[in-house]
Image (cartoon, rainbow, N blue to C red):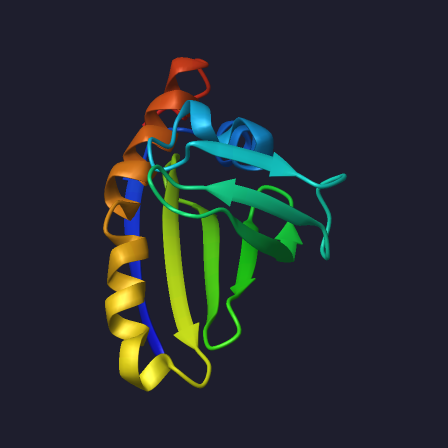
Length: 145
């Protein structure tokens, strides 16, 4: 298995971030790495969504973990790889939120290509988290520091 994670501190509230994160169909508004995205039902564990990154094939992912204002985890099974991405929100002491994106790549091909695939997928996580934070701050929902 291969994994890595990225964390960003923001003054945006967990609730403001969650409003954007839980609107899966709206991810493309703040995530430049999404050309199209569509949730296949209500947001719940087990619900699938289809996402197409620019210039790549469409992928189907499944919501695997969901705790409002805290975590949304999705899993993509390609057959040889199982790609798990957790989007976590942790209230910070003194206000604001720590956003953490964690990716884990496992499965039969993980030893051969897990790091390469994982690095390609997570290459923009820092920018995506910054864009999420900026979109949440634009709503005016920030914590006093």
